[in-house]
Image (cartoon, rainbow, N blue to C red; front, side, top):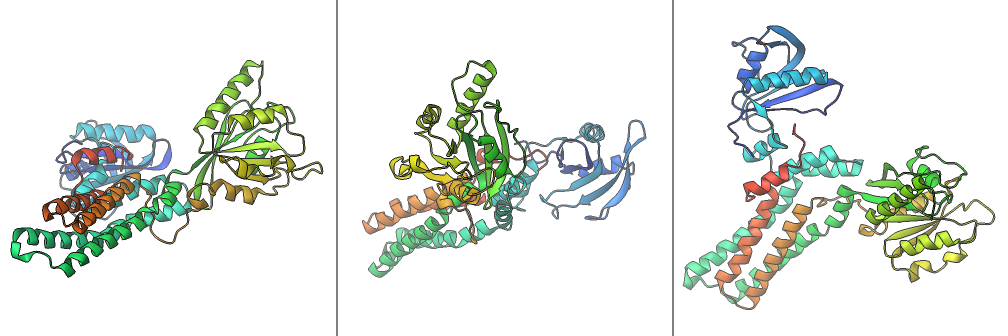
Length: 460
């Protein structure tokens, strides 16, 4: 990341045509640049108040736009710096022209996430809160949105504060015992310290255990439909999506390419992928589609193997089932509305096939069994639920640091039980405190911060 003495600029709204485009400027020259753009060096804006102003090109004196402008004076801004915002009309050409002009006035383009990084560096946000902004922007479901909002309000920092205070108290006690020999821990206090550390490890373990559900909420599930041609994969895909996304005909091999659509299942983002029917074909285009279907199957978190339950199991069905035997899958017996429908062929399969989590009777036509199918999609992941009234750990970085801190605390507790010297015990406790500090940003290195904020959008 570049020095924070620079003045930076970026478009904070998505690129493309829109009613409004917001340009954000941050740094020591923000007010000077704003004054230059409104062609008034004496302009003294009231902080936090929007005003309608003409934006002028200082080189040609030409009016570029009528925009709402606002100035936020340090430290009372999002990132603790002088910040100016220009709410312009959303023409891509206009926005690019104004940003180019600001660059000529001495600003530089912001790095990804640099506005938020400056907010963390200046103490306006905890690192977990800044990461929650990214998750809030990327949230795909209402449930994910609520979790990101909770984290943005500082719940992770608040949850970890007692643990850090507990660790500090223990460290001070052991440091004192190390410094003053006469202050060696009496037997009762020695055991109390061990119990305290073990209790702390259990509390952090409970928080860590929420990651299975949190990861599901954050990353979602990639689900691919596979099966031979004409078993109703596309029809079932359309039924789950809720509209006619895929073309459906009676002609086998209608689907030649992959189709994707995102849905929410009990608050969990699910990416559904419709694929070409798997069979041996001399048709070059269909063969390419079959190859893509196999690639999607290999990359999916879960497969829905669609079988026509109104017919005898064909050799092509057996080929598909054999190919997916090493991949987590559900068998969806389609066309349960037909009188010839039967489940007999698959009775007992769930117990016999460790990678088959369910055999479902469904009908894409009547939509019978779809709710059970939705539930079956979630069941193999985090016990099928991402719902929680409490805080969930959704970030893999947080989870990894929690695991490290728990292991360090447990190791120190064991060393205390073995009557190891305070110096050795303190190594683990200091490491645990550092790991917890890395979660909230107090002890995170600049290199790690750069890696984290490189995943943010430019204007945030």
